Length: 404
Image 1: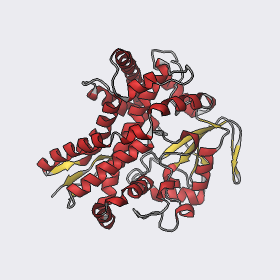
Image 2: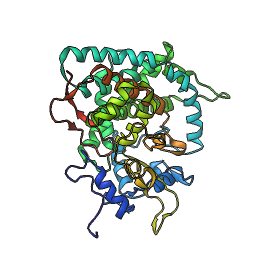
Image 3: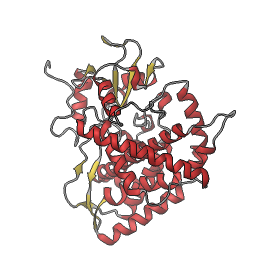
Image 4: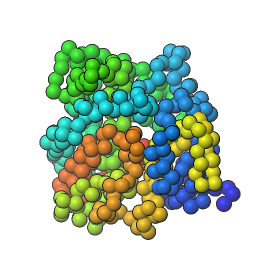
């Protein structure tokens, strides 16, 4: 096994990474990857990494190739470094604690649940359009437009921004893979500037035109005189567009695909709506829309016999942890919508950086997928699906289905 290493560029990896991840768990559960960052693959180690209080998420705390990649990305911004991101994914306590507390005041479970009728209406509209066509690409017609429309309406963004925001978001998420070429970085840097300028303009517009929406709530949120600055508002809104959209696209598209490949599980949920909450957690475990998270070691950290040095990027193998038989049992690679502990999946991370939008993503996935399988119980693949080629935000780019 001396020539074994983590190789997400191997042919067929994106279509089915799980056999390779199983090899990593068994033979190299803690390793420094050829791309530079370290990685952990076992459920217990991933859990520890995400919960460890002495670790950072701030890229400035790291040394090595990943820092050089980020520096190159930033320097493309007119040749100078912009201020560091204030996104809650990129800051440590106490700044993270303050930002999350403020954002959480607007992003409450009650506010999210109030969106359910709107989400159901948007899903029903898309399903009506699909029914008229007979054979459709589910990603184009449902998985992609739904979360984008939800986050746009939820924030109260002005109409007419859709195409630009979609393009910028797609270019930015490509930088989340462990290996990225220079042209992709340059495209993303340009998109980053345009996205920042656009969102800043929308924030100023929204201050003059408040509404019953999340962006107005974020502008107004206050605790003991503390408010989000314009930069902080911009970075959280940008995060919602990028993380809140792309990951849910992958959940809906890949979730429907896996149910079609497991017809007995599809029938179970189709015929019993009460299965829904557990079903969406199991699909999240099984497909893992975000395959890796990351931390930076402030000091050396040891996993078994392996010591990871200080100031190193460490990838948490969420997808690997979600299929680890040491935690999930011998049927870890099986889809079981009645799995009793499915909610313990790692797809939203863990610890203080647990995804703030988890409840929204689960609601969108549950409404969209269940409505689809109820409306089109006899759907079949019209042709081969096409994967998006991304290592981290793995999902389907095309899923052509015959609906009747």
